[in-house]
Image 1 (tube, rainbow, N blue to C red):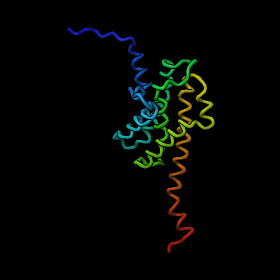
Image 2: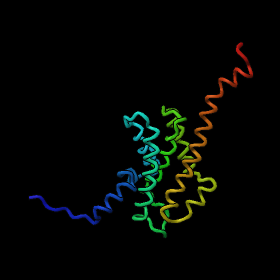
Image 3: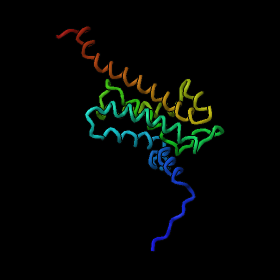
Image 4: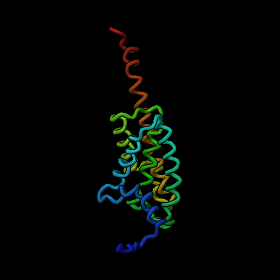
Length: 174
């Protein structure tokens, strides 16, 4: 006969924990934010015709879910718990939702690296946002780091596109 397993968590809490930790990526022992960011990139493997729209939808839905589940694990009296990585995932999805940035390895590594740089460095106003408490602050500091990474990624991409034109403009076709 099968025994009923008892859990200290309800079904709602387990689902909330799965979403907040991005299905367990946040429980990896070292660098959970980095692993959560990398796990979010797995969405790029979906066989959809327009991945940009899918990433934008995932970002918006993930933001809403994050606002809903983060209070289960972090009330208004605490900061961002390390296992909560839904905020990193949402930021990564929104970085790559832009149709102007290619999804090849170079740009994925650059976007990932820029996001982690800004998420760890926390330039103004990311540091101010992170010092606030509550679900919105947990989600917003990574969204701001994602915005910084997206702007830099777009600037690098446009520079990449402009270099041949600038070369021929200044040096001509010799």
